[in-house]
Amino acid sequence: MRRRISTFAVTAAIAGGVLFAALPAHAATTTGSHAAVARAGSIHVNLDELRQQSADLKAKANRLDQDGEHEAAERARAEARAIDNQIKAYEDAENNV
Image (cartoon, helix red, strand yellow):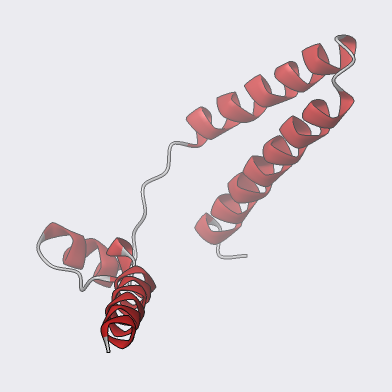
């Protein structure tokens, strides 16, 4: 009987953790000022900042390549490509492409 109770307690704790983790914080309903932004569909993104991040990552990748860290350089280049793709997507959305 004692083992069965502890098994139920562990199972309930795990199930509770799974249910708690299943709904991330950003999935909560929008209220207040966030609701107006969500309804209007406007997003403000600083493209210059994203371009600077991409340039920094590319410079970091070049330094890593010179140091012989080729795998880390590829990861940095992949991050830079992802940021470049985001920038392109934002620009396309702005121009209704």
